[in-house]
Image 1: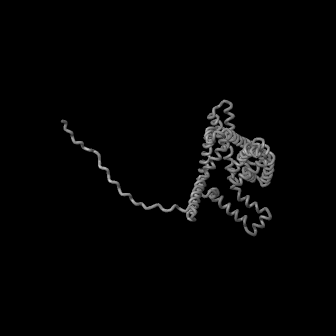
Image 2 (image 1 turned 90 degrees about the vertical axis):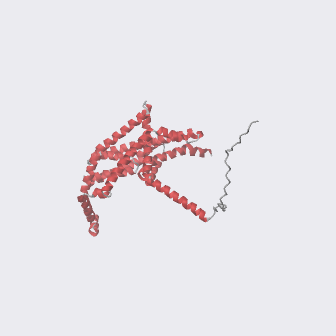
Image 3 (image 1 turned 135 degrees about the vertical axis):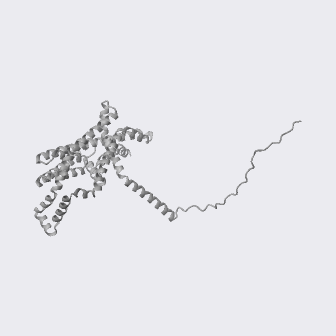
Amino acid sequence: MAIRKPVISLKKKAASPKAAVDLGTAGAPLDRGHPFYFGFLATTGAVLALTLLRALAGASQVFVLILISLFFAAGLNPAVELFQRKGMKRGAAVGLIVAIVLIFVGLFSWIVIPPLVDQINLFVKSAPELISGLKNNSTINSLNDRYGIVDLLYKKVNANIHDGQFVVTTFGGVVGVGKAVLSGAVSLLTLLVLTLYFTASLPQVTDVAYRLVPVSRRSRVARLSDAIIGRVGAFVASQATVAVIAGIFALLLGFIVHVPYTTPVAVLVFLCGLVPLIGHFLGCTVFTLIALTKSPLTALIVFVSYVIYVQIENYVVMPRIMKKSLAMPGLVTILAAMLGTSLLGLVGGLLAVPIAAAIMLILEEVVFPKQNQA
């Protein structure tokens, strides 16, 4: 008879359940109609919105550089596609376009900047004599005898120039001059780099953006977007044509009236002409100031001639070029440039006309057909 061995149980005794902790009973839900609840949510939303606006305002310069870079990339895209159609790869075409741009910037710096700096120094040194010459006008001289405005301005400018503090005080001290130069150099370098990347990767960026659109509408959106990018490129080409005409006009006018440094002034007018409306204001100001160093009569001739040319360009040349390239009325072009400049300044002047062209394209292709079918 077999002897049974005792079985040893290895199971642990079950732990006795812990007593539930009394955390209280749930109260009534919040009354969403209570004024305190509404005021709290409204205040929280206002604080978040204000914080977001402050953050966007702090990064406004970055957004401006991105917008300008996208604008330049869209403007350079037709030239890149032209070289692509001739058999070049996109990377090589972008490199060639960037090389041309860098060569142009280098030539501009070499031709324009040194004589322009000399001319500014000459104008600053002759500023006291120009202010003193205001007394030759009988009306200004009588006002000066009563209030001493011209004498006070003469003493102030003369003291700053002789102390060598004119440029320093203009930019807010030595540190201000360094900050202005460094900020301008960094912004220019950032703009060139962003433009290069956007130009090289524009097809990839647009493809990713189109994939966010539903498949049923993707083809339509892609065609409209490509047409808008094409119109931006057409605007850049048209504005460059207008700027070339302005530069030729400044070159001929400078040779006729013998303005000092005519060639650099013409190049500067060309660059200012790239910006709608406000660009010609800057070009006319610089052109007139440089002509003023020769004689007041020369400055008057330059100013009047430039104003007449701007009127001809705004109402004759530009509407025809823009209407042909952007397929939009001349009045819309002028109004868009004026509104953009008044709202956003230089950036608004650059972006207003192509944005108006894009809006006109959407109206013609989307809105108007729906209205005709209604």
